[in-house]
Amino acid sequence: MIQFDYANLLADLVGAEHGVSRAEIDQNRAAAARAVESFRKKSESGRYGFPHLPFQEKVIDEVRKFAAACKGRFDSICLVGIGGSALGAWALDCALRGPHPVQKEFGRMNPRLVILDNVDPAFLGAALDSMNPKRTLALAITKSGSTAESISTYLVVRAWLHKAVGAKNIARHVAMVTEPESPEGKVSDLLAMARRESCPAFYLPVNVGGRFSVLSPVGLLPAALAGIDIRKLCAGARDMTHLCWKTELDANPALLPALLHWLLLERRSKPIQVAFSYSNLLWGVAFWFRQLWAESLGKNGRGQTPVAALGVTDQHSQVQLYLDGPNDKVFTFWTAGGARAMKIPRAFSDLASAGYLGGQAMGALFDAERRATAAALAQKQRPNCTFTLPRVDAYHVGAFLQLMEFEVAFMGELMGIDAFDQPGVELGKRLTYALMGRKGFDEYQRQFDDYEKLRRRALG
Image (cartoon, rainbow, N blue to C red; front, side):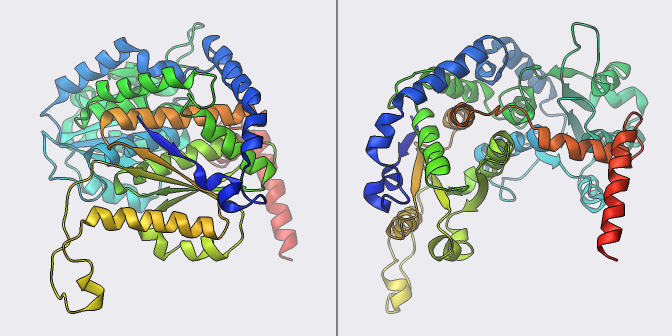
């Protein structure tokens, strides 16, 4: 299973001022166990649902059947979503079909995943121009069913499809994912659109937030349509879930990382975490993780800012700051085995820069770069740790995503915050609704007007 090396987080390696002592770990074992027990109680009460997603066999089978029925019909899967409705799908696609833009040739048996996660007109126009609407399946995904960015983009995509295939065929080119109808009969706007045009709809459980939804139809549907084995994905997540319910610190793959990152945040003033992916395949996961960590743990003036870095690329763009800048960061390396074997050719052996490399494995150089960076950081008293996946396949990616979600949940418990809400996001949404004239948001229009008055006054 996935390995976690935390030696470089310890005071023995990076000093007492910046590292965690073994005594501190032992002193907080009971607090870590209580974090598991508290979160499990909330999960089993139905308050939080992500731990249960990989066990929902009926949903997994429904997604697989739909994907099988679509096989060979489309050469583009156009995902309309933003944030948690898009980042998980992108992470899975990059990890399991290859990083963009170096995936193998696209076609009806290997459709391209195009993710429309921004309302920049230049981006949307270029994306539509790159696809053939007659061979495109649009996936509209929004938990609330009313997100302004997703609804507006879907309306653009729908009009584009309508022009090419006609009103009668829209349902053959659209599928949707949103919350189900409430017990009181309330239906989201996206679900209402699906019903009016008889488009297939899949559901995200009400107790699963968008950033925790990658193993629901939000992530599973685009993954299955792209040919990813979602059964293996969920099998890895199921096995990880069983481990993450253990209360013993050394037996729970998510609990020790959570405890250590909490101690480094709260007691060593490390308010920044760098997710340093030494795998291009996991680069998409770094952006998914960035939202998960930031939106879950940035509450009440506290939190740890996540930064995505790619090894070895960012050794040449960021590591100068990391080694010689402020010592306010903790670094988490991600690496994986099972990479393609590739030898460095023997050529120009009389030249110093080439001679020692010839005949060696490219993977050995890649791993040496990571280990050297970790060592350099440790020597500079910069705490760092490493997660290692045996290989980047559906099983281990599913396990890793579930591990990350559990780590965030346990961090929330240790910090004493709700890791599953996002009050800071809501204000910006409501101000946007007001500016775009949505009914019922007059108070937010007044707030924005007051803000504009202050701006003008400040500028004289």
